[in-house]
Image (cartoon, rainbow, N blue to C red):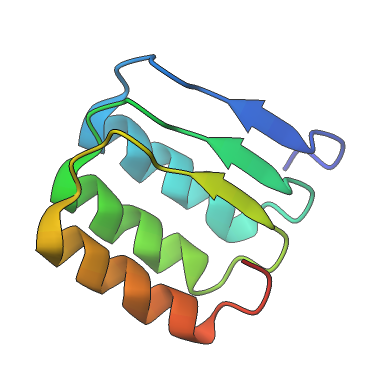
Length: 89
């Protein structure tokens, strides 16, 4: 686990829901990242659900940019549930 990286900008990289699933796995165990920008990546509702799972346990992120990802109502619902228990975002 990387302990020195504090900011990650993946803006417009086309990582999609599959890439977000991998990122979410890393966010579950990473304690150094405070800022992540995954805007305009085609995350969609499935990717938002993956991300929500990580946000439930991640305590280091203070900034998360999801703009332009068309997460839809279902994705927003998953993220809202995660934000109810996340104390850092």
